Image: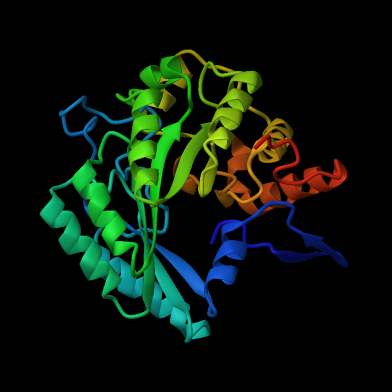
Length: 318
């Protein structure tokens, strides 16, 4: 689970989080431990299958940015069962959330989505779903289905916004605009669907001011949740090929930590923080090297806020 240091002994000092982590949120929502299991259910994307483009986003690999732990040689049901068995060894009373993560997990027919979502919710111990997708891969009918399922389970729809800057989206081969995201967000919120917004910090050509503008614009939407994903470059991606040909300056570890702490200050205090740093496949990571050290980054972000005597929402304007 991301941000799993509600309390962490560092030396003899107890470090309390200064942001509203997903684990904190789930502990308040459920009277039992809840774990997230990431799966690849065989979806694809419209800018990968030729509908809009081919090749996908420039930073995306053939796994569709799925978690490094996903074993794609198994079906999503087998992926889930394998992970669930491991979790129950130490947490026999655990409940589970299935995260349809890789690619765009609403990019299929309505009947198929109903079948797969229903099957997932019927799995033993499952209390909810996270559904990762793009803002151009939804429809009113699909949102109605998700809203219906959310009446009896915890459902969170994750939209990849990435940035508010359309020039950057175009360079990334996203093949949607920020206005597309806003419309998709509006339609989901009209149905009271919980939304987690995915953004990427450090995209090519974006300055710190550009990134903070994205953060403030997203904050004004008062989202239920957000993922702040650090940009990393994996080999065998278009982003890697572009970087090798025309390198640009990547954020240092200290720069990323400070910028992320500043972003947290602008976000609403009630927005759940699902992620604060990206996780690459280790053997494919090209840069930055500090991306390998997630727990260290999380700790330092929290310590930065502590040093400033600040916290998530300190600069939020309702």
